[in-house]
Length: 122
Image (tube, rainbow, N blue to C red; front, side, top):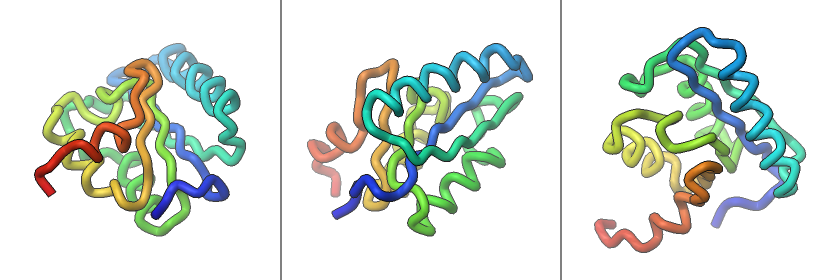
């Protein structure tokens, strides 16, 4: 299927404000997690000053394209609200990349792909 480690992992960071400390805090947390779990080839995608109410954001769009192009096969986020504040938008985004990348939410202690396999709507 997917998720063979040689491809790059993506660290995705989103903050609603231009607060550099918030970006740095997320970055440090995600880099430590990535290192501890053997993800050495990291690409960082940052949407600083972008609300989570909209799914159309510059760095998230680039990340989605990189997933679809086979450059990235793992996405690591602080929590799922970094993708979107809308649960529906988050589910739809994860569903759109499911066969190409796994999504790990550090604070939620969740690999979304592990949970998704139990959903029976497909």
